[in-house]
Length: 314
Image (tube, rainbow, N blue to C red; front, side, top):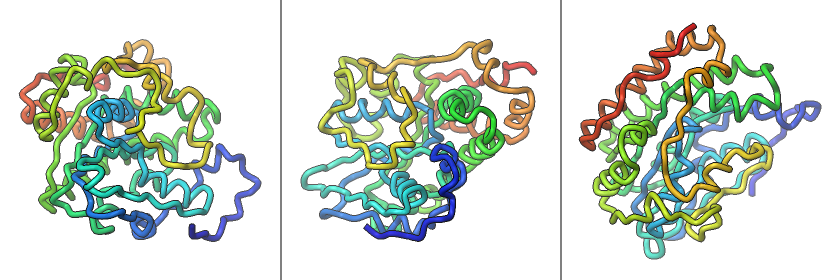
């Protein structure tokens, strides 16, 4: 493992450090992606964090697809936080014909948004013909409130304005990543968390699996074992500080995939008037709705395109 020079931030609390870390160049991340052999077909999910991607580890592992929890982001975090590079070794297609990797953007600093997992894989030599990118989003207000609830309590409001900027950037970068995939002719698909609100999980994932050329079964969305100690689910090593208490308890306990929404009253208790206005002015609601339209056309399903940002009052 290569070591890089540590910044002089020893006086800072380890929690605060997450908000103050430097960006890691994409080429440095690329250098830590290695191969056991010929690369397998890859489903690469990219989304702002807290949009339902962790549950997909259970979805895809249910049919024995090895599923990875943000291994490329882990390279970025280990380098930025511990100043140590830990490689991600991609298994060969002989042992793993298909892989699922979820990579999320945010929530602490800009580096966790712009690390560009798609570019990192491509620059490491991954065959673009073997990649399908699944672009995923959730209602922006629900997503931001989830960020605030899970990532800010330990620091109250000290870095709240920074988190809001990172949040807005995460949605805007999604558009850039989509354009990158289009420009390179990379296969792509989409997933909107709220599709589970308007459709059964079976209906949603039966269509997704058909699109991906995968065999759907009842166990894809239900009859899950409790916990995530499945042999096909892999968590990359990263600093312990990145696992907030109880962060993924809902997923670990879940035995089926189902929509979990919030009332406007609940959401309103975690977001300020100024934050609502800033999110509205940012245009990310339009980015979210554009992916809804794309998802409806792709899978011939109906999704309510009136977001909580449209409904919430200041």
